[in-house]
Length: 288
Image 1 (cartoon, rainbow, N blue to C red):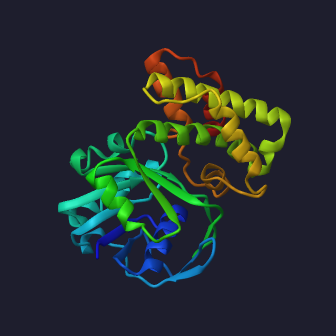
Image 2: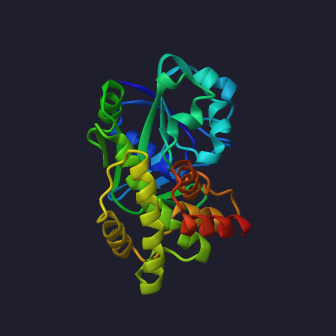
């Protein structure tokens, strides 16, 4: 049995917690900013009322085997406030976040050797306080190695597929290519169905192609066909599916612009690759 603390039980964190709680093989604790007056997670095939300890004071934590960070990328410092009590000599900090800079984001707060970056593709929404809904199959990727294999073992028998990858960089950039187009929904405040519009699809394709070019410069292996693959996945998604960027804007919360399209822009500058579509979209969304 592993001891696991999940920092940030939002949409993704809630689905992860629900899957682990359903398996009943681990000692699970949620770390939140405020008390949770009941949390129900609707997985694809079962509803899980979460009945696990919830901590709201970082000073009350204790060392665990795993810290799973599922906060938004802009809240790295807030998540790290839990580390002094949760992270012991053997603890691994798994960062389940968007973007391609998992280690860089948390290196100021914990030994980078303890950080396991995790690519997360878990369609989930929090439509109301205390309710989290999984909207599609969930998968994660981790770097191959002992830490990645042990992380995958935590989820054996759950509905979340975890794949240790010898080329984690490619897996992370593929997800960023998907996310780069998601800014359109945030700009228009329209769910995934908007991607079925022909002209919107053309714009989304340009955003993705810029990300592919930048990812290749960073060493990721990304085929030209990835654009069509991503657009097909958008067209097959439920028309009312809401991505996290759109949900945050609609709720008036901070947005992960920097970790998503901002990363495409920054790495593009690094390699001298123009990213006008991502830059325009990011500027407009930030101004809104």
